[in-house]
Image (cartoon, rainbow, N blue to C red; front, side, top):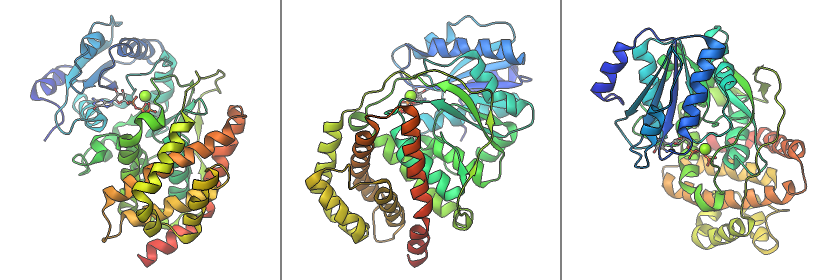
Length: 406
Ligand SMILES: Nc1nc2c(ncn2[C@@H]2O[C@H](COP(=O)(O)OP(=O)(O)OP(=O)(O)O)[C@@H](O)[C@H]2O)c(=O)[nH]1
Ligand SMILES: [Mg+2]
């Protein structure tokens, strides 16, 4: 079944011949989406001069999001189309609708932008679509300056795992703002993934991993500071964590021949001049992270003991007494994540229960990270993230050995 309603497909056929699609998945973003549409349309006109359709795929917002998107005045050569999507409710289904729209329109490139962005500028569209339209890349990921407490799933898991598994240093594999070629769209759409967490927040890590593993040309677009409606991890990132990490772990079984042969990692080409600027501060609540880590012992202690090697489990026991800062180090974290990745695929374990047990551990790791990051500026924090990614590369033999045993 198509993610696009028949009526939308008809409207799109009438717009055939567009070169670029800017897709904006949304759910309750009335306050910000008008700005995103405006910046996207202006970028398409000013920098690219190509016929563009902005496609807003909305998940049934009741706050006037599609109306806000549709009422933005746009320059000639740009059309705005707001549509609901069919399928599992979630960001991934909305992105699927955008990819389908790209195919129906016969567009050469597709850019996706999150609807909650407040730092998007017209030149973002050029940096994301430009390399694709020039035939130089098939999949462009965003390279932002983010506040040290923003993007905790990216920093603790998505980046180091993607880098260590597949050997490409893609700093923002789940950034949300991407550029795709028609070839990338054609590669992604037919995959039988749209009934899984890929239809929810698994979409970004799935697209990036698939792009790397299927040999698409990947580049990173320098976009400067990212300002969006960031979330406090302890308060609201639990379900997103399970969808992202569940998808990441599932992909181990899809591309074993790819990740098993990779050692070390390579940099990914960067597009555009470096951008200066400071992102807005993002707040995280360390006491509630610590509390959730402690509660994890009560709720999942037995699972931790079953899943984790004794070397890691003993450190958690100590972390419970003295706090995670000196115990849940990058190396202990990397080992623990690999142990969980293997457990996720064990036949005698429930993958959802495995993921649920990893959430409080992630809260502990974020608390440890925050402890060390507190006195550091963004460059210092970047070094911390790099150090953690190196630990994931160095500990990779542990994953290989456990995978082969299991
Ligand atoms: N259509 C649709 N879009 C969604 C849904 N959930 C999220 N989105 C959109 O997906 C984009 C990213 O969602 P955010 O909640 O900003 O997530 P994020 O920025 O990746 O994560 P944080 O770092 O936690 O803020 C936004 O444009 C949302 O409106 C949904 O259920 N349906
Ligand atoms: Mg966001």
